[in-house]
Length: 313
Image (tube, rainbow, N blue to C red; front, side, top):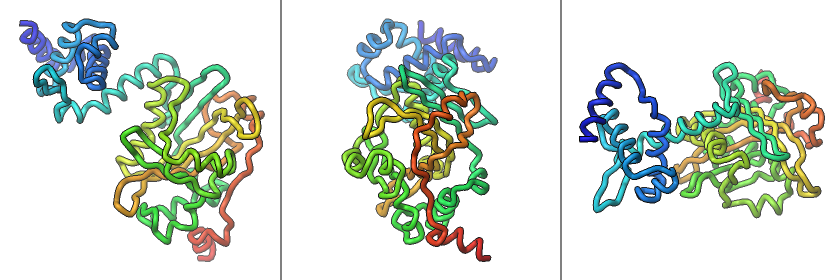
């Protein structure tokens, strides 16, 4: 009878285009059960009851018109629909929590994130990609042009001259892992080659600000890979230095590019360029004034084959 009532309620709400008042809690039940695939564990994690979780799932399934789970011998598995809607469900939860905490905003329809934890700060603001054409960094433009000419192929000869400046990531079962640190990358300049080598193969560590914030940070990697696109962000944060204790403030712009390994598996490449004119709305300028000195990197014009061609034209 409860299931019939849920179907009737969902039908009425769908007809009126009205989401249920408890939609956030319903989605949380779905995401938690999808993570555990065990009703008892999900109930414990949620601090809820079996009846409530089942009702939430039943209501969502009634609204969507298809099952989210397949249950055999009390074992839960995501249905095709469940697998398809799970990423967006996680996104809704993460955005809801961060929006309520004032950590997620939009600036000109582009994403801005901010979080603080103890003496750590992190600001990230997505930028219009067109800014690279007037930027002082030749390396930004050269990397973008090389990526385009190489069709995203990491091993392409057309990409070889900018590859030493990049960090390359691969998606794995444990998340995004670093597989290569370019010899001329800011990461190597910052931490040293030995530290960089020790980080290869490790998953990107989670942010101190919590699971929801980490989700939106890593969403940029998923977005770039899935859409096979390019993204530009300005970032201000605090990072440890290998030669000192504590955290030092740094600001940089990050160009993320989709790519392909020789076996056609997907990759994301990241170019990090230190910047003093950081474009992040609401960032306290006193933080920027105390930036730790980082050696600026750029490609010599004589090695920038595409920039040189355009200048000579």
